[in-house]
Length: 319
Figure (cartoon, rainbow, N blue to C red):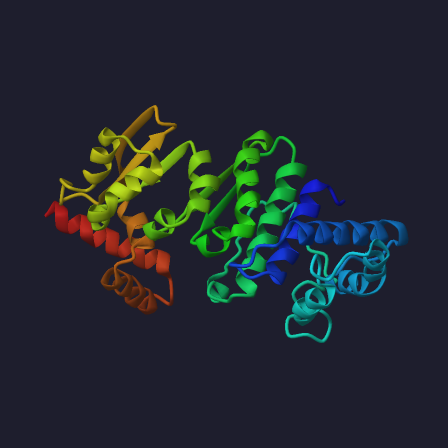
């Protein structure tokens, strides 16, 4: 139940609650936290206690405080009063007591497709990093326990959480380990500055990614030297990337994409879809309004509206 990865994820979670981004723990604090987690896990095993943050908090406040006193651990090495005070909002009666104390049993292991939508909390300093860690723990659990089944985790626009100092080793572990368990990790971002400015991202993700995919980078033309250096692209690969969508056929609906594989092969490819698929996923507001307006006239049938518009466009081209 509590293997090494589980223990480490619990420690990372509590550390995220306890310390600010610019406040790394001392070695003595890391040891004290590790011992506290291990001690609480042993209590769970021996007494068949239901695990919760409330239980952990009470253990630290009571029995673990006595352990520290017996060991004569100094306050400057581990300030238990400060530790409990900072974590009090997550204990029962606190502002965030609902986060880590649910008694609901969710069976996510058997779910084939899981989406965690975190847009609503992406700027929340407390909730966003906690939820991100929990998501990573869910995937690592699936990764290790589902034998012979392909697993994939796609992290989209979650750089704020995974680029934190406390998450670096966790992400690095994931990217180095996932292939051994017939899995794959993918990270997506639209903000290139997130990549350029984070050494943690470079160390944990880019250096462990054999496949890199880039879309149109022309708006970053003036800073592409930094991107090239970060991604380790050759001058030939840089030229390929900056050629994307420079000479497309205006009569066809396609976009170009650059794919690099392990530094040994790279090329620019055109990705073209049917008119129906294009209309289903277009981000152009005028086209979306056209689809939704026709759909409202067809009793809300978006699929039928798309088919009608696609047919009209083909007829117009053929005339």
